[in-house]
Image 1: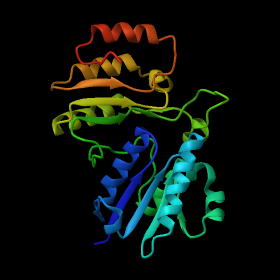
Image 2: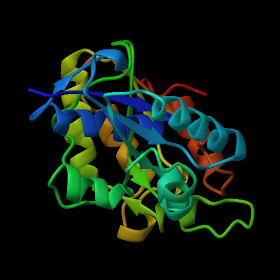
Image 3: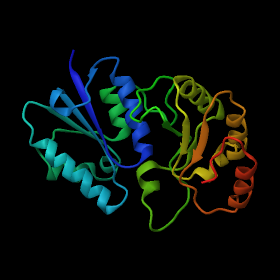
Image 4: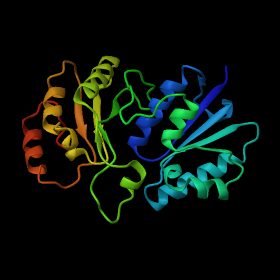
Length: 236
């Protein structure tokens, strides 16, 4: 059985994608925690801001010098600059956009909400990330997220709750909700962040909930009030 190592760069949202990828890879490959032991190296890149792009390019160049390894580059940087990367770094033969990687390498149809009932964890047992939506529908002139990830897509509450229960059962004690635009969760499919939080707070188990990436919005005041009344939501 061939072995694989995944190098995950960028934000926690990327990390959840790497965890999902590792879960699917584990069905066909042996997962390695050190790249030197792996036959295949997959680099999940970030392309959001300039330092992140430079880190991704530096990592690609570093791994491209290895001999006897199959190096595959995926993720946000490829979504933006696939043609340029293939031209400038010819030593790497495989660059996949997110959609291409799922279809051509994993043999799966790419979904905005893939099955996350199984997972490989890249965090310590004390905390874990749950991505509740992807993409962004705001049109901020300074931001490339809509170009990289597309318009906002919120996961169904039922699918998020299934993932939450699985992770609480696995022993994670802090559940960190992440998204490109967390506070606007559910607007495109008539869901709501407050409804999601209330359902999560009713879930049995010893855990707390933390929110990241809260863009300024008129709902912020209501959310702060909700934090003050919650027994599980970290006032952060």
